[in-house]
Figure (tube, rainbow, N blue to C red):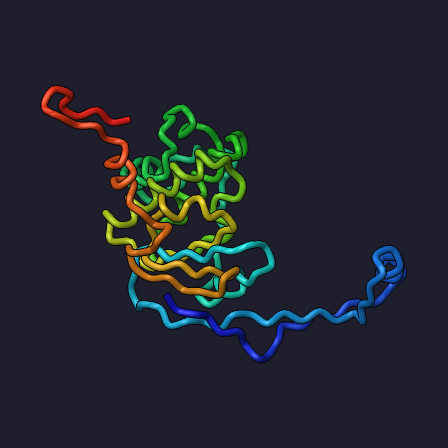
Length: 224
């Protein structure tokens, strides 16, 4: 574990002090001079090559500022008259990547993007973003937590089995860490960097399975 350091130079936002701000000052008995300052985290030393990196923290804690150090996020363009299946380089890539993110409902493959559910849209976008050196902000923010965990497992498996490297995700949801199994985690709330599979919150799903197993000469193996 490594402690992060804040920059000494702040990011500054200056706004007009208008009637709305004056009214809020009066209502909440506070004072504001029109200037906001935020001291972002310094960019830590990270491995040159990795599979998945994760930046996690609450809104406003500096996740997106750190994420910009890795580049710009690619936003897929979806043509309204083409199926989502038809937006990949080859049919094999389409099948493998859509399957990799858990979008396995074949009828949905033949639909245009605009008629998909929010969960399906998230997975379709994710499938097209799975490339080396890509970044993804607000990862799993628009889907329910079961979909988020399933997508995290699928993404992790695909990346590690297909020589995809240096994907960086940012999220406010901590429940996906143990499912995603990233190589490193930056916690912008705690100001800490964790590296390696020894992360205390990143136990293998196999460990949880083993803890729920009852075995014996008569029982053979029962998994709860």
